[in-house]
Length: 208
Image (cartoon, rainbow, N blue to C red; front, top):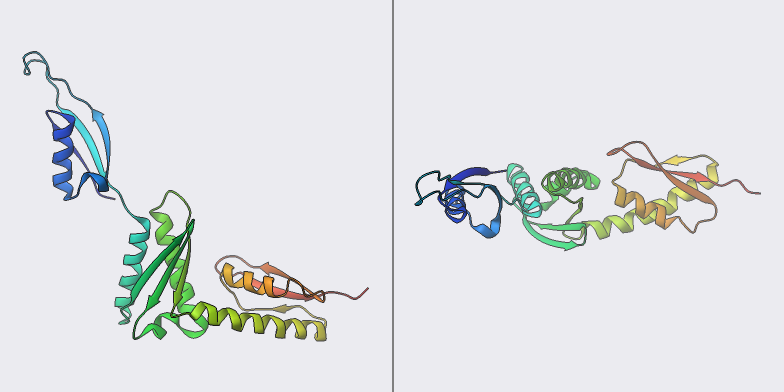
């Protein structure tokens, strides 16, 4: 967070001085008037300069975008990013020639990057945002895979009569599993563990 304290004969002059030092404009800054100043007699005797504190506004979504760009660059996998916001959810759609490096095995790299991006965006925001990273429609393909996995493991749980634990997943992936099996009257699901290592457990229901 960049901020400066500046003085001037008037509040306006003090603000202009601060903006010049920060190399920014008033619409991108927050102004806190510490002292409005005093002109004094004949503008000289007893005068007191105006004092302001000016802080550059940080756009949390822009900071998150910069973070993703830097990660892609460090991995030699530059990305283009399209951003879409729906209320408190922010979607970052990534594309690039080496996008597979950012997806990783079973989306593990993408999930880790998503987790870190959410930390970055909320560090700079007064409200909590949920971040979803997608790379060339990977999430939809992953969703279809998870639904198939959920049904297959539910059958395994029923057949064996034992609980089946899945690998750790981010919350939205666990939700896909829970939703896929919500109408299956032979099993129940629950999440266990602590973030970011929470996982779904599929338990067979005993027959009455």
